Length: 308
Image 1 (spheres, rainbow, N blue to C red):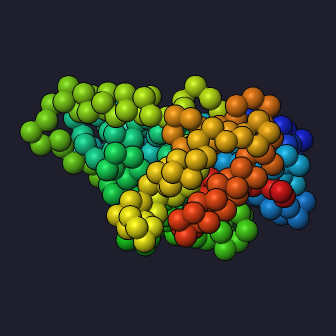
Image 2 (cartoon, rainbow, N blue to C red; image 1 turned 90 degrees about the horizontal axis):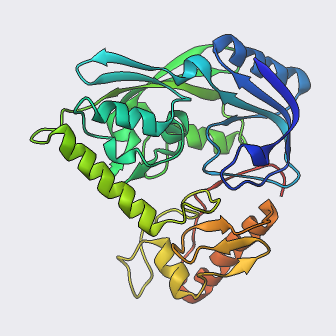
Image 3 (tube, rainbow, N blue to C red; image 1 turned 180 degrees about the vertical axis):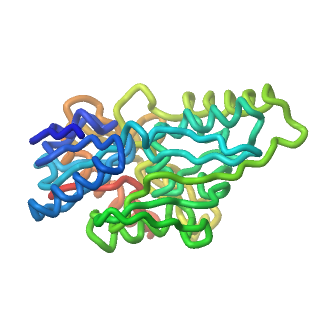
């Protein structure tokens, strides 16, 4: 187990902002993870499980708790045969998606461009281009703070749009989830009527769309706001937050070093020297202006950690 104190979280988030974590633990196996939980318990501190930090905004003051990131055995992909895979929570989602694509399996190949880990993807039920990680998931294995393992069948995980039971539990517990995702099992279908080259072409098309429409060259945390359940009174079928943000004239709007992307309005970027406070204030300004103009309430997709 690697243990650091007062570790700057700006080194571990895609926004490149955030103050220090009181303790930062890199756990490479179950014993390390249990030791990290014991540390949090001994110090009477909350803990937070960190994936790739690609959907996270850490406060400028940092996090007075234990940040735990998984590595080592939690990064393994086990091929169980016939399209069944058991995947560690620290495995990059892109690596898993490409591994299955190369074997001719469909279901998650379009998710290869998502920069997070498998655990984070399950937690948020990540998705893109008509695919979601929860669709092909059959089982999620977790560990609680006492070191007990639990298995959750997919129908117990309450997968929905950017939602799972693990996210709900975390929100209820104030960011210290009572159970930590350590692996998930999947059953993927053979791509009927499609070759591996066809799947690669579909992925290439998705990656090209992502590159053309998203500010990948600037620090960001992906979509800032969740897709709407329904649109405005005037446009009830328009559920893309970016549309309303752009129509509110907010593309390019800045607070400090934080900017609403000029390429995609549902992205806030660190345009240089941004603080976490800048980013949070800008997201709140966007929410206020869209609500005033369209009567729509935008909900953040990005997770906040620490005291703002």
